[in-house]
Amino acid sequence: MEAKHEAHLHALATAVEQQLMTYVQVTSKTARQEQLIQAMRYSLEAGGKRIRPVLTLEFCRLCGGTQQQAMTAACAIEMIHTFSLIHDDLPEMDNDDYRRGKPSCHKQFGHAVALQAGDALSVAAFEVVLNDPTLEAETKVALLRILAEAAGAAGMIGGQVMDMAFETRGDVTLEEQEAMCAAKTGALIRAACKLGSTAASGTPEQIALADQYGEKLGLAFQIVDDLLDVTGSTDVLGKPVGSDAQEGKTTFVSLLDLEQTKRRASKLTEEANQILQHFPDHMFLMDLTNMLLVREK
Amino acid sequence: MEAKHEAHLHALATAVEQQLMTYVQVTSKTARQEQLIQAMRYSLEAGGKRIRPVLTLEFCRLCGGTQQQAMTAACAIEMIHTFSLIHDDLPEMDNDDYRRGKPSCHKQFGHAVALQAGDALSVAAFEVVLNDPTLEAETKVALLRILAEAAGAAGMIGGQVMDMAFETRGDVTLEEQEAMCAAKTGALIRAACKLGSTAASGTPEQIALADQYGEKLGLAFQIVDDLLDVTGSTDVLGKPVGSDAQEGKTTFVSLLDLEQTKRRASKLTEEANQILQHFPDHMFLMDLTNMLLVREK
Image (tube, rainbow over all chains, first blue to last red; front, side):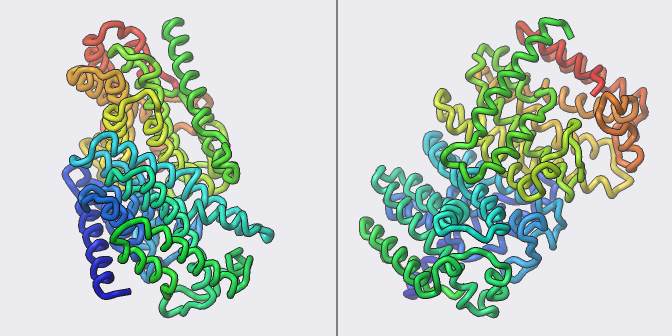
């Protein structure tokens, strides 16, 4: 990534992280729930690349909006993402003790508190947008409809259930795998892009383009994830390489082959970048899209 | 309860139940998530007295609104309540295999699906209000702010965390116990009343009165719950009597004594009914309030 783009990415991620921390604090109303608040903060702070909120802020900018207009929506989508990771790590789901090199929320705070921290983050995502003093009611409703649809049974949560069901099946088709990824990972990434363009009161065309870009990027993102499990380095990833194959999990690599999978990811990245051409000043997002294709973790 | 009030209660509960089922259905968008949808429906159908949505519909009526104006808010609060019960029954929380005489959601559908069904109901609660074609955006935002505050870290979820923390402590004070109940049970009951008066565009005075009534009723409700664990019948309750004392759980009965606790519940019921005098046509709600005091389950 170009240095100035890397600096921009860092600035956006930092702005989101600072804002997130102002929303999740021990106050007079939650003085007795300190452990819950600490668990919520712990998982929010253990964030990764902050891709989703960065997409929200950036699409808002590309559609002529200010950072402030999209900030609560950016924080909301990161809260939904974080809630999903906390619940995903629980023993009844993926049973992961580590997340990004740190103990997962339930290892750090216990299962019950982690469960509730996820629940509370899910509610808080809606709350921060509802309480934003700078947004019109119509805008809040438009943003939260995008968020709810992407998070719910037809989106992320539904995708997680499909993913679990697929684990016990050896005959998952490419079409099914794509539908699962479109829901589990894709829905939130698409929503992130739509939230930004909606927060900026973008035109219907701009919102549709943001959505199409998000769809391409979301699928490319998941395909690269599958590739990294084969071609990545355990040290860089912070988790053992080859675990998908070992667990007999269906991935794009098992459905296609390594070369075809790589070509698929490149093609989607190219298509995503073509969509960006419709927006002036798209150089940062194009660089980000390319970076996600060649990322090492 | 008077026969005509009992009929009214039944009519309201049935209207809510029918509406709830229209929201949670397998559609083209969720055809692959059928098990998740079935788990959500299972827990929604296994409902109890539907007190919260009935309060919402009734306070809407008392403030001059129609049933339609409050229906999505009534369904939303029941969805939040149901989501909390599903997660509460999970092994990491109360580990209950039965809920109202039927296998709990995770016994019926497995832990992972139950976790996700709770998550999806939490999101769906916001979604049904957001998608209501008959409400103004301003009203939706007002309703959802009430819902989010009542459900989140400062309300129901925070109260559940306090409740869990209290289980390992022998020195819980009456003041702490009241704060926990005000959050865990009280917040949603208060919200139910506020949602109804808000949906009807009640005056600030009416909304404040609904809130005060809900506060009294919520505490009375929890105190009667504690009483039933001592004075109730295992057959009628559908769960073993005396389990609180056996587990060394702090309850109002353990903090006060049986007679004082009964007096407390009666006094709160009386105060709640006094607040209702400010509303014309309050006879049904008064009867309901009294019924909840002398209920056997």
